[in-house]
Amino acid sequence: MTGITSTPSPFDGLPSAVAGLEPPRTAFAALPAAVRRELRVDQVGELVAVRLYDGALAGSRAPDVRRFAAGHRRIERAHLALFEAYLPREARSRLGGFWRLAGWLLGWVPARLGPAALYAVVAGVERWVDGHYARQIALVRRLAPDPELLRVLEACRNDEARHAEDAEELYPDAPWWARVLAGVAVGCSRAGVVVARWV
Ligand SMILES: [Fe+2]
Ligand SMILES: [Fe+2]
Image (cartoon, rainbow, N blue to C red; front, side, top):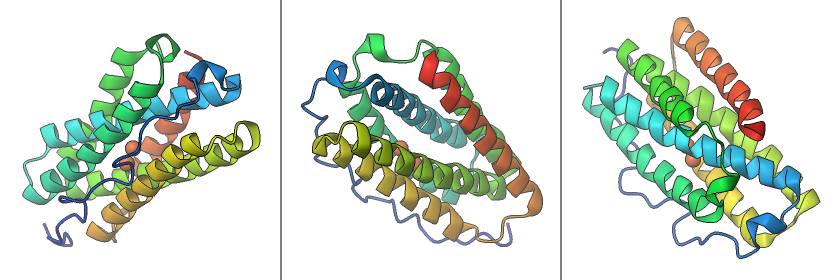
């Protein structure tokens, strides 16, 4: 496994930026429809993230990869718990089973291909999620500048950016094919957002 450092993930034992945060007190139903749609996407995204790391753990026996995936998963679970506490069940995507499977495959496939593929996919997807949260934060500031909601989104964004850095640092020189795979995973994520807004 040349090229793979054994640097422990900085997420080992580290609290998430969402630690101690509560769901916003503003009722979900009181938010503008465009913001509600974005939060639906976030609940799906965090579910997919938890499942991605589940899939990675199922697909890899490498100790570094497993520690990395378990550390990130702990934080994705905290993100998901926040969105699940806030979004009423009827407001969530109806494709729960599909998202669970898709997320798992998004982690399992690269983990089977090796650490290079997994780190590249995580780096690509988490970096894209960072930008995605940034665009949402700008939208929420414009349409419903609720400080508690913004705090949740900013904390999640913070964690995602650190997840991306974590993966980039662990494997800075991913081979071309791993980068191609990461591009495909980002493409799937983009498509998932469009679907999750509406279904
Ligand atoms: Fe997350
Ligand atoms: Fe993340």
